[in-house]
Amino acid sequence: MFFSKDDSEKLGKEVITNLYYFSENQTLDCNQYIIKDNNTGELSLFDGGNAISLEGLFKGMKKLNLDYENITKIFLTHEHVDHVLGIYKLLNILKADPPEIYAYGETAKILEKGEETKILPVMFGLTARRFGIEIIPLQVNDLRNLKKIKISSEFVFETHHTPGHSLGSVCYYEPKKKVLIPGDLIFIGGSFGRYDFPGGSLSTLINSIKFVNDLDIKYLLPGHMGISENGNKSVELSYRMIKTMGSFY
Ligand SMILES: [Zn+2]
Image 1: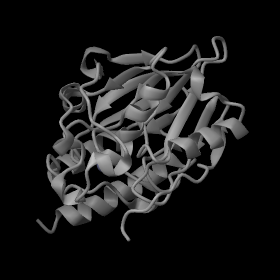
Image 2: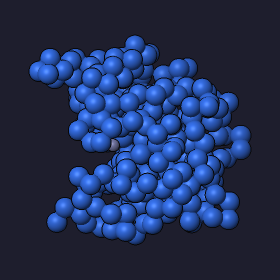
Image 3: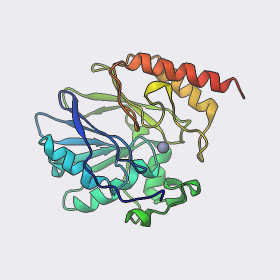
Image 4: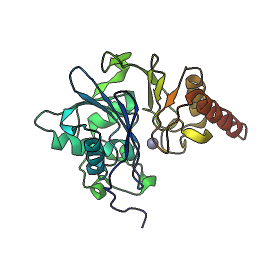
């Protein structure tokens, strides 16, 4: 069956001090990242996963002495099911003191309106209910109004709108640490995000990858598959691959 319950532990790893990577579970899930503010103990979570995997994230966090009750901010890379459903469950669990949500442009709009068909495009053939989630309108901070996000004294991210995989896709870039969190724009091994979902576009995807190819990146932390500590090389490979694709059209 295409869809199965998978709440197994998400394996965690401290990539650099105070930045943690939790690898995706097998079924329609995504990688998640956590940054700890060492002064306040607050945690910022990047992407929500598919909701079913949330227990697995909590288990993985516990092993690294991270307490999910300290999550105060959630940053989303884009509006797709495997990246956002987990936030509905997390907001419910933390309803006494709910974390703030940040997303860019179209993603923020979709979440504010609670547009299920844009979170789960018809082609996924799934409903949120299948994941035990009801999509409700959320309060979201639109990153279009914020050029920089200070997560801690160590991590100050720039946000860059990088559509192509979806309309609301955004990259988070920390220039001092040379960290890029690109969502589903690019992956390691020369691959890149699909552009055949609603709002996707090959030419836009190529332009967005061209843009990040000019950034100085050591740690590439994508939404799926593995991560790279040789970011620039990896981005360049994806850029070369997609340019070859582009030449077919
Ligand atoms: Zn996606």
